[in-house]
Length: 243
Image 1 (cartoon, rainbow, N blue to C red):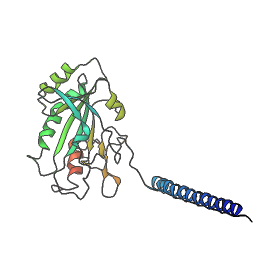
Image 2 (cartoon, helix red, strand yellow):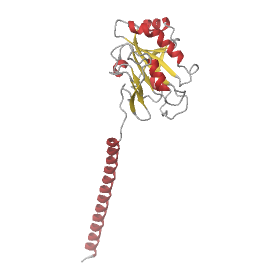
Image 3 (cartoon, rainbow, N blue to C red):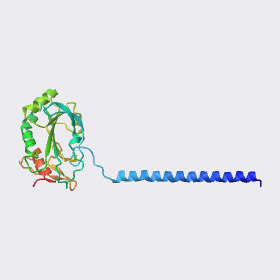
Image 4 (cartoon, rainbow, N blue to C red):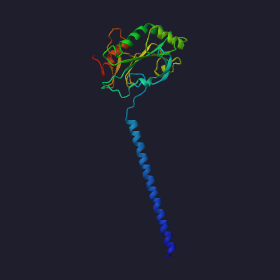
């Protein structure tokens, strides 16, 4: 066989080897990528992600709006109130959040406004021995026409010191599944809903340690848990005060 033929055969063998080597590398890469995505799917289907919602044990929907705080309207970011690293064993000063949905034309909201104002003062860190509770009011428009002027006047009338969030377009209320006022929520520092006054049975709260609901005690005997009763029983359960 001539040297030219031998050279050509040798080059063909080299090219074939390179082709097979490249193919093997490609197949290996495909296998690695496939295993990676299989791992992601296993994690996705075996983990237990927390649902977003407003029932006890769900993660409260976050929102951004404008709020009146006594010095004018300013941007309000609900997420800024949260302490994501909080846990049931935390011993820090992470505040809980009490959320009230109200309508300035709602008679029941007017009737309960004085109590809510008193509770906001009663459960501040400077007054009681439990974790601080931050109150916010979210003003919707269910009953009649309302406006930011009415929101401001309502807040001033009852001398509330907490922020009033504008939800006149009821977008936040829709996300929080609120269809009537007043409706109250108690949210853990990490953003988990601990109690919802509008649930079918408002006498249950969220046990963050055992990750299950448990019955709350009705102090007044009227078969309805008030916001202050939920605060008393839930916030002191973790990281502050005595029961």
